[in-house]
Length: 333
Ligand code: PBG
Image (cartoon, rainbow, N blue to C red):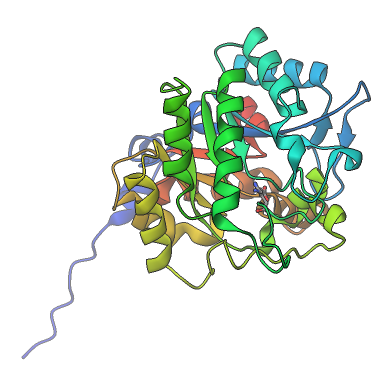
């Protein structure tokens, strides 16, 4: 038999000009996809740079509000607030978390009052408040985080955040049963409109290093590598991550999250295909830091890798993206 060459399939027709490429582009980033994580600090001081996160600052309340106005004007719809608790207010049980006038609550009230159109997500976990840097109350022997003792505090914290005006509370602690406990507490407090964005598939990741520097949870604990493996997911486990996330849905979460984002695109895709809830992904501090570090050395193009990294997260299936690049990207769009 004679070998007849197959006709060449011309896929490059769709890539021929910029206009054609734009017409057939499947995924686009828009400012409304983005949630900006912001660090807020006590006092009146100037914005404090965070060494490993170029362009990210700890802001006082006044500067925080100004930043929120700017983000809103740029089309960013959401912020995620993280308080930097002064060391003197941290203790073993993280009791500052339940102070009705603590920093994050004052921040929520200030932002709500001045930029009401911005959707506020607050982090529910004890790590900004504990001297050991863990996300919950420790067991009596100090060897682990006590799940059920922690649930009670997370639920009370959520009610305080909702009362201050948080639109969504975002439990990032990875305790079992927290979504149900928080939902029940919110409903009992007549906060049925406050949503829960569950950090559902949160992995025990080394990519959180710069964040721990930013909020001081690492220095409080005296180590950069806090070991949270008894509650955060094993990076090796895909099935367990999906099961954990679907449990959060069953317990009443309004939206789910995968974190980190870039190294876990397979989890984002699988979860997108397994739930009809909105799905968020958190491009964490280490993902941000590595692009900046390489760009500073002249090894990567910051803007192009930034945009590609975010597009990839969206293409994988994320509807919302928490990213420290939010403002820069919104400006560029
Ligand atoms: C803590 C929390 C962490 C992040 C968000 N909430 C760190 C941790 O689990 O130790 C990390 C975010 C980032 O790295 O950007 N509950």
